[in-house]
Length: 193
Image (cartoon, rainbow, N blue to C red; front, side, top):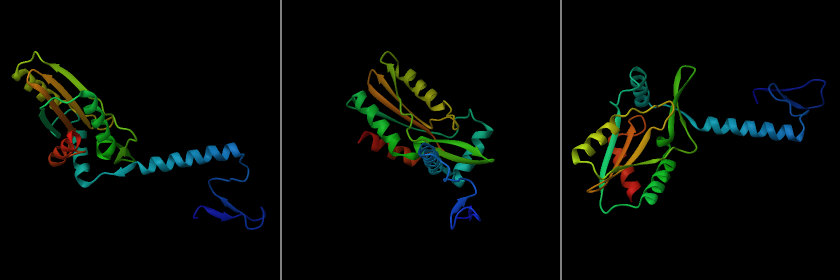
C-alpha cells in the first residue's frame, strides 16, 4: 500500500510498513495489534457526517443548548392498557433497530459528526398519574416535551408512560436532529404494532 516499501538489505522482497513491523512481534502482540485495529475499524464504521439539515440543527443547538424549540413529540392514549414489560422491550428493540435513535454528536477537528452507539439507552420512564387531574397530566406532558436533550451525551430520544385515571398515556419525545414529525409517528406505529 501507500505506507509500505521494500526494505533494502533486510531480506529479499520483504514488505515493511512505515507504521507497523510485524516481524518482531510475538503471537500475543500480534493478537493485541489485531484487536486494536479491529476496534479502530468499528469506531470508524460508527461515525458518520451530518446531513445539511443536521448541521443546521447542530449550529442552532450550540447557540441555545437548553432550548426545546427542536423537540418533536408524539402522544397516544393506550386503550386497552398495555403490559409494561412488553412495551419496555418493544421500545428497547425499536431503539436498537434505528441507528438515528442511538446517535450523539461530537466535533472532530471542528467538524460535527454523528456517532452511532452500539447499544442505545432505552429506558421507559413510568409515571404514576392516577391521582392527577387531566390538566395536571397535560402540564406534565408539556413539561416533559420542553425538557432539553443533550446531543453530545445522549440519548436523543426518550419515552414516558403515564398511568392515569383514564388509562395509559404514552409520550415519545426526540430531538429533531434524529427524527422529524412524520418519522416519529411512524416510529410509534412500529413500536405499538
